Image (cartoon, rainbow, N blue to C red; front, side, top):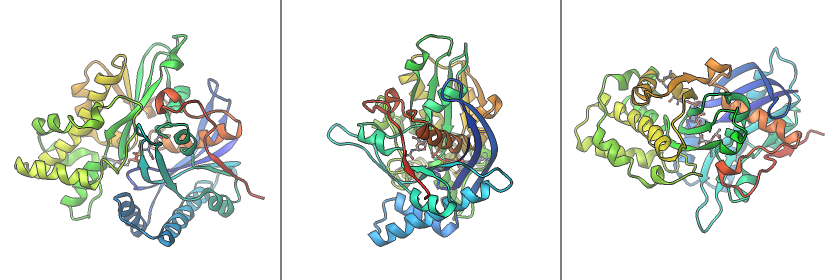
Length: 379
Ligand SMILES: Nc1ncnc2c1ncn2[C@@H]1O[C@H](COP(=O)(O)OP(=O)(O)OP(=O)(O)O)[C@@H](O)[C@H]1O
Ligand SMILES: CC(=O)N[C@H]1[C@@H]2OC[C@@H](O2)[C@@H](O)[C@@H]1O[C@H](C)C(=O)O
């Protein structure tokens, strides 16, 4: 089956689109990436989405308009990625997260992804699955991360334990024990590790008056020195100490959090490059700290993916602190790390039509595995 996967994450940089040829079910899942592309949002739309993610109040009318504007962009991305490809049988669209509230003791979680699937189906003429997180949330789960079951099918190794570490706006990990162990599937774990690039991007944007949006290859941070005292202080925050299941978003690691970090760094008289090095170190330290706290063992190998995998300074810092693990990227084992999430939502859509469950309850905390996503048919 040919499936298009569409995803826009917490960096809000644009829509990642992947066209895949997929066959098999779970253990025998076969995926071939036919095309992958990122289609940036028009700047005004990106600004609007970031403002809404940052808590700006909008009317119901504006919400409707934003939902449709995002659906149009997603449908466009689906059309473009199919150029010179066989027509897709199915689209899996994650949509754009604009609000994510993890569950707490007294209430269910809630997560809102815009870019309605019925409009994408209508505009493309292709059956579309969307709203993947809703069922898991209704079953008491976090609704995220949903990629771990796909990581387990595509990236486990017979003898090595692996941590698949996505570094997008937010970071998240999937731990895969060696798959030669009979019960390895029950011991797959995953959670959000904390900030990925979100705070680094905010700092670069602030320091460059909006002319740059990210620290290319980590060059700016590489000229600085992290402030370890601040890292220790910041890591005391509840989110880092909380045991999985856990998920997060720009609601926690967004503009307000960034402003507090900035004030701390101002007080310590850090120069610009030191500030970037310190925010980058928070991503590094929060990843390592969460492995040490919550993994059954440190992984033999770490496979990086997401835009942060291209931040060379971040990668060097991770390797320097984690000498026991070999750090590679998912590209080196056959999965393009820029499009892994888009591929994942194509597979989740494929599983939905095959009636295969997509969430891992031990990861999200949902009460049971479930078929994820709403189906929008084209008459
Ligand atoms: N060459 C590079 N050097 C440094 N950072 C980079 C580079 N390329 C991309 N990035 C970072 O990666 C980010 C985009 O990553 P990605 O597309 O994986 O995030 P996302 O999917 O939006 O987030 P999430 O996985 O949290 O949903 C950019 O905002 C930027 O910070
Ligand atoms: C609510 C939401 O959109 N969460 C994203 C985000 O981006 C990374 C991390 O936070 C992860 O939990 C999730 O995405 C991936 C694709 C997932 O569900 O596995």
